[in-house]
Length: 379
Image (tube, rainbow, N blue to C red):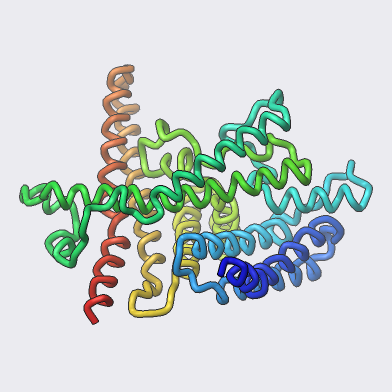
């Protein structure tokens, strides 16, 4: 059974992905930056192969959805490297194998040309890096297998009674004092599980790719820092995404959004409108990615709902930044100094806001899925 699944996976999904990886790595290594048409054609072919691999994927499990996310990420990064950034190997690399080696490392490392938030120190040896990443991958895999069924976190029985129009949003229940302990537990576990599932799959894939890149292709460990930042820095929505949440797609999404903002909208990306457009564009692209990779046949198909959801996240983030800018500006004009105690209080308020946002909005998709599956089983 397992062998048949592996054969089908290699034939249906891995084959077009392997061809796409090969085209991108060889184009990065050997096609000069002046050959724009060739690079554009290579990018288009790779994107088409990635979309074909996603089309052949049923996306019924976290693993299949994770593979679809990876294919979408490959498409975005390929277009970034070959077309938008137009990257080429350093002039110090003269041998064909060196250039191909660089192309492979560039393709797999999500930190190409960027300064990592938490880079590994240069004193980290290859053996130390591989040992730590292998330990991390083992722990992630064990924890993933533990929570895979959800029995460890979910309430014993979920029914359609757990989802009613009056329970859609958290704030009205808090104001009316109708929030039950069961519903609060339900929202908390759904918010945790929706994030934990994605974080485990993405972090595990990142650890696995880093083992291959550093162990086999001799990629520098500094190119593979931890994919997630410090949770202690996530005391606002903007910092949740910029300082804590995974950075696998952030640069590719913002580069595409910045290119559209400058070349199509004609806005400078350093301006306030330009930065706002980049945020909206990046979250729009992320919503499109989640809509495609999360699509599945049947009555529970979500359509373009993730696009609206992610645009809503971006709108709340921009609103948050506007409130912060107005508050800090007012304090500055009044000449009110900041105290250490006051900074701690406002940071605590920020954490409370982020937790509320997760419990209020991050569970809506899970609630919709639960309601849909309840209807499906009743049919």
